[in-house]
Image (cartoon, rainbow over all chains, first blue to last red):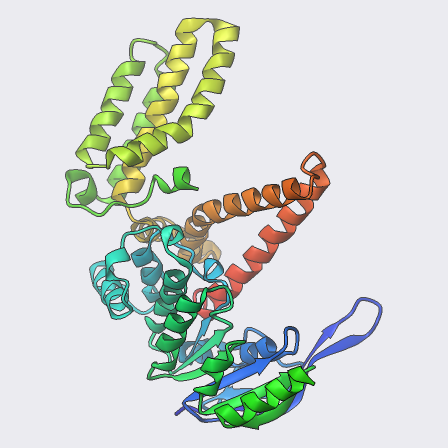
Length: 232
Length: 203
């Protein structure tokens, strides 16, 4: 599995007239497991931690590398390695139809239009969306939209997939469907989630609270720690 | 949102589907210009017949034709009512039919041309701009994304209006416009992040 390395990576944001606020305290981690979950309360800093991995958020100090590549200095190369799935697929799906949206992902790597179309259709078929190729992205259900967003990420064949609360807006059935699809990926997965059931199925779980990684362990162990924290 | 989605690409193998994008855009420009320039009420039904013929040739589903026509209809009714008031019935009829024709002509282009085909074509046409430091691919993508963002923006407008109504403040423009602008800007940021994460614009 690829190595995601955080060395004293810290994120601070300026507060107008009031100095700075630390969103993520200096954090050192080496992530090599296949399935990694990040759990924690809203605003705890877990999404910031996930966004550091592909450079969507830059560290204020410290360093983040993916397979030895610095996310700040080698951003484009890192983004080719790391796919990112957002909470709201509506922000991610920018083309009118499903196949066109996948084609958009492939524009950079596949220049020939007919080959690009064939590849996009194959990606949709592989993700159970073959029947929706020419449907409007707005006509899909929430679960289908999230699967389409994931398909758009997988079309680029990344080595790592980071998913930031991909099931938060979904009902229970779709949460299970999208969760299963993510956990079955061959790629390394970093899953930010409130779905403790899915988190417990991961090889490693990080618990984030108030910008600090307060627990780091196997699925059940870390989830139990987090539940204890919430119930306290 | 369904009205805006009426212009979705409908895959097919008709003559219009197989025509190069440039020929279709040029054809649309010439036809649109003719519709606007020819000031004769007797030509208006002819143009409408031509655009209906084009839609039939492209095998655009009747439902899409109706949705596109419905979208233009409201504007056409309003515009022709004003024309009636100012210039009389003949001018009103011409305006009404011309606007419908323009909507249908545009539908025949969008139904037979995928957004990616359009982006590829725009990118080719913008190549000379490279000399002045403009990235043609980025120009083409910007145009496509702007058009693609319309349904999402309209959805946000409707949601914000409903939220204002639910709070009983729909008559206060600030209660509607402030959250609308904030949400549109937030969505633009999210979409920017998503495109960035997909590596679009890295080259």
